[in-house]
Image 1: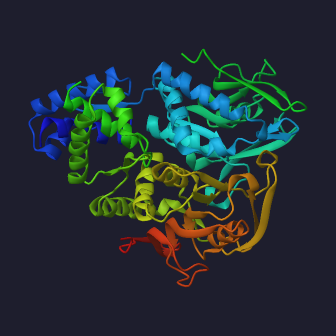
Image 2: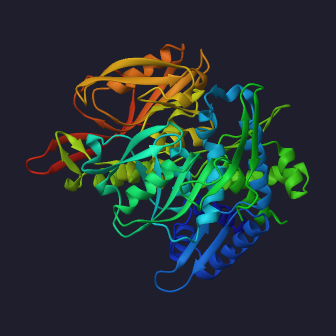
Image 3: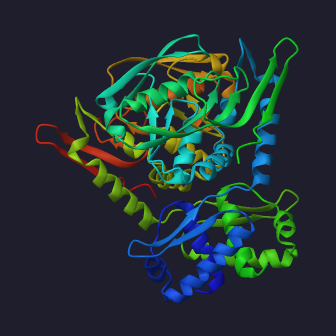
Length: 269
Length: 269
């Protein structure tokens, strides 16, 4: 196999399993090539991915060393994604009344949420998280994609304790959006005590459900090291949690005149 | 940019957006190269992906023509995935009692479910589906990944009609697993009448919930053209639906002696 072909396949295999470390030997065996050739292939792959801002190839030395692909999205691509989201969200056809907007089509658009997840992956890459945590249902796709890109397990917190979750821990929390006490529940088997988690969700208004997720995780002595949400309501300015990364903000919603207002978070990086 | 680099980037961009058609002009502009060079790059990319059984590059001619990446997984990689799933599922620590097994760790392992989704994508690539449909919660990750690979929208059927879904259609159905009547609900905005869907779910016992999904979709005159499940119980042999594709089968579960029995579906292709 020629260099051109090897470099293409290297990029394909590495970027299909983000943040998974492959040994050099794996590629030597796959291509029937010497380590020195594979090293040169990797250099070529690394350079072109860096130049195009499409990802980072990291090599680590030592016995457990190897090579892995770290996802990346450029500032330009983030701005483009934010503009696209704001434009789609501003469609007055989304108004459901009572301050609710229809957004499931976007949250369940897997190629769109993968781009959103790449922003979170770039942001949280070095936070040392062991898990991505989310609460069912609409945040699951973006949380799955973030977990995929960071190569860490996803923990889905349920509204109800299900028999298929085994023994669970549950809490009650106050949801401002629904103006009532709600319940959440987590399987004891899903998490290891003393670890670190990043919370990913689709939407944040007052921060009640993210605070709830943080509380239920603290029952397992799990530290929340970061929080990413696709959309954050600009109001109330003071939320129940202080440290979170929205992709876009929801501004004033004028239901009477059917005008929606969304704007990008320009301070992600 | 040299051919080696262009081929690597072509593979990266195309395989990051499976089943999305890019015009040749897009790549000409990106690389500042002539159409003839890009065509040769694509030939090199196509050949090496085919040789390694890592995907198919399809070109279509005409005004709306272009090039797209079609996901593929080899028969060997499917057998390996099935073995891995059977081995992990056979762990007696999964026994929860009453015929229930803990499987959330696997269903929420995003890199694992992406491999499963690639099997479904290969299987259902040419079924002409407009949607992937699933019911919350545990099947969502594999359904998201399948929707991603086929580049079609995901529709998530909810257990309860939520305010954020707008107006909904609901049905009641009998779930054999839970031995009771359950409810499911779908947003009217989520689907276009007269289209086609593929159902993806994590587990099938009697087929009640897949039958329910099919029934609720038929309220919108949506035809189910395929069904994929990660695990199907071998019993009862006669299910409420006849045409479905499991990745693995669950055989006898001997809870007293803590012996689980899973085996691959060798007739996927």
